[in-house]
Length: 351
Ligand code: GLY
Image (cartoon, rainbow, N blue to C red):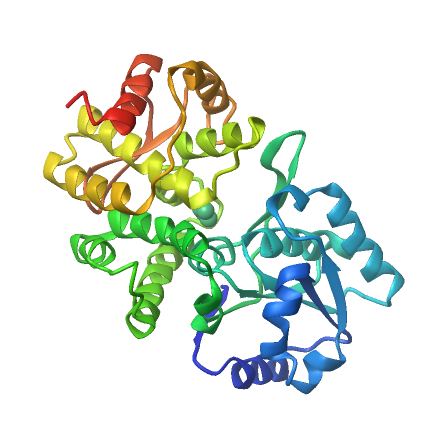
């Protein structure tokens, strides 16, 4: 099982982990940003300072076959063997591509993820999903390949700008909704303007624990792991379209909007309580502005949902909730209902 360490002293924990693992050569993967902003935090560790460093371009648009190939190339030309170890230091893009490079190089080498964004820490770095974008589709190529260890230290979150912070926070709202009233209330009552980092640390620990519990039961997403897709069926469509029309939105913003739509559908299909929808909508509206899609985009959004890899046969696959913490996987909704849910998101009408 993947070990997730919530660190308060990253260099000490890193030294301990490296001492426990056997490997012949150490590589560290960063992108242009994490190399400048995050690498210095761990460079005082002697082994890290001596490790071979691979730097790739930052940004989800670089989570592609060219960047992947450059990682393979570096490993291959610099003496990596099946017994080498790769440390992935970065956000979701970096741990996704680094995890996939590690999973495929010489049929698989060990890796450690050190997420440097909130989104990476509460979602991407944990649970073993790795991959790259391909053919215009997000995460089209990939594998389930858990990192040996995930080392989470909130020291990195202090330098996040507000949008990046909120992007990760959307996944925490999702975890609250699928887990329990307690978690859900805790996420909605957190002050996202004046961030209390001590409080945030505990919230992140609890949020990661929600994901860990689910992944432990269903690592390959055959059943209950689909709970983690709440907000993502419509959210991914928002995100993909935003890239297509050159007005990119952050993943978590698309997910937050997707959560509103999918809770609306949860009311229609499973009787999710309206008051809980309104409370969630209130928080999301206050924190995730900037929605700009209109009726002209609906058909295109629908086509993205039809091609979502979570679908089986011809139906669009959703995760709904009948209440906070009561998960309904493998549900579907028709086109008209989906369009109604986007109307609800845009104008608050339809209930
Ligand atoms: N991001 C959802 C999952 O890891 O299953």
